[in-house]
Length: 245
Image 1 (cartoon, one colour):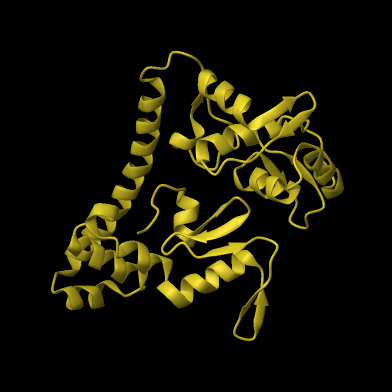
Image 2: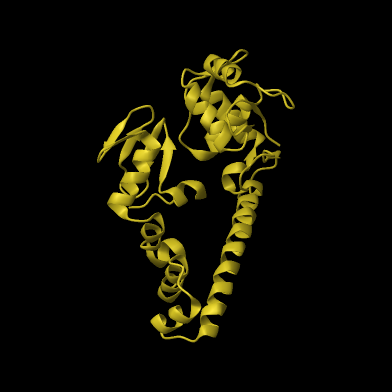
């Protein structure tokens, strides 16, 4: 059973990273970050092992997701077949012949599916805002560096305080007990940790590691999540880090 209750980024790569482990969304196979795995004649790290596993066990992520059918994708059988043809890069004339439709129908479906994707993004934002407002009268927070705006990024003061009290043993100095695998809780935790970095200042990787190591022993995972979730940015060579946004 596919785990659909995850981020779009995770769905597009076919695995998620939780508790320092890369986990396949389609079968639950796990690869511990920091370990080395053998695939054929190659030795690879956990993220690469998860990608190779995805290819060997499930084919492409696209096909594995599409196989979930209308209940998962919201697509009719015809739309799913059309989307697969687009993914394969087939020309409109060939698609029309394969599906026994006109070229005009192919062009319309291409436009319609693009509009469906745009509407889905807007709906996610609307639904998240509606859920946050329903029954919650306090402030709503969306951090400036958010890679997308959906329900994970919208948190009230009340929710944030409860999460902080649960996962931090101390705020002065900042000490993290554990990093939650739940997206909304993880984002609140990362927001607090990101507050240890001064906006406008550029940090060397050693400085970042030292700050994060004082907060939690798994500073490598914290550093990666701060980048992945848009709280910190870094130079391409990894020589400098700074607060994003």
